[in-house]
Image (cartoon, helix red, strand yellow):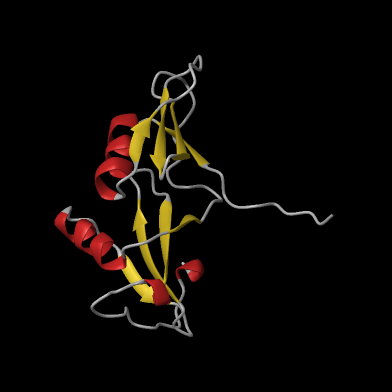
Length: 145
């Protein structure tokens, strides 16, 4: 029997700005705030396709410092659908983003930062997208930033 780490279950953000962070994941990415266990600390769970993929912890009433960015975590990626629709949504919301085609053309990507400086990578299988126009294939990589 082989061993597998499996797929990403969720990621957790500790924030002093819970309201704006929830708003970003709802309004910008289209996740839904949903059920969360009755923990002894405040927070929210954000759902995609019925799965709690982003866990938020509100540290505003604690002495824990808010990290100025995402720390050693560079980005978090989602396997996504609806490339053109997401680009329109980001533009309508006035959100800065970067889109690109991974060299070879099989994968299209959108990168956007949440209110805490966490870079969100949205990956789209090119063959499954009906986009009007493919993003530019670029050799530079956000991983270098």
